[in-house]
Image 1 (cartoon, rainbow, N blue to C red):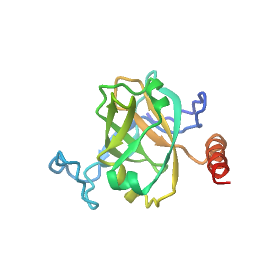
Image 2 (cartoon, rainbow, N blue to C red; image 1 turned 135 degrees about the vertical axis):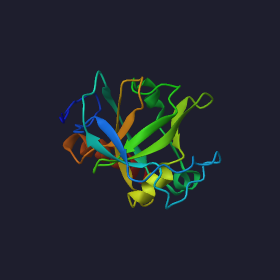
Image 3 (cartoon, one colour; image 1 turned 90 degrees about the horizontal axis):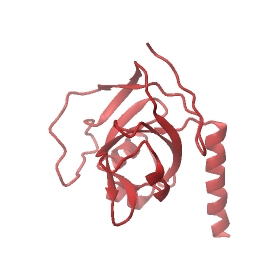
Image 4 (cartoon, rainbow, N blue to C red; image 1 turned 60 degrees about the vertical axis):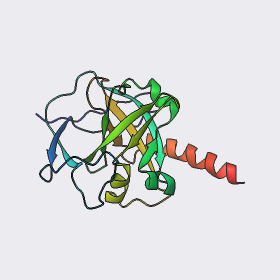
Length: 180
């Protein structure tokens, strides 16, 4: 059974994603080395999301913006806003998340929580996600975090909808206001 969910939440984008059933595009390869090195041609963590089944009591209540920068690409690390700590879809024991683009393709990346910084960050896969989506420095994504706090959360790129545009416009106007 396939269905679409269109929930709304505070500061959230309208989303239309189906429950993930992950199909790997290539056979599993050896685990990525502990140093986090990822070969640009490595498709090990790249999947296709297809609809099946239902999703129970998932949180759709948190959206955030992520800007592609030279430093986060070089470090293969994206820091999430501090406000992400209040998102019920995330928990400190979670070791990975799935980034989903607008086409439904997904990338499994490492998710960590920094006790000293009090924030979550994505590593070991952010650079690959950006390369595979042909991102350039300065590109901005609006992600919607989806999950129940018990299973691997999804961070879905919001489709180009009114709510996402408003969030992006606020960000860009603040950014341009700082330059003036």
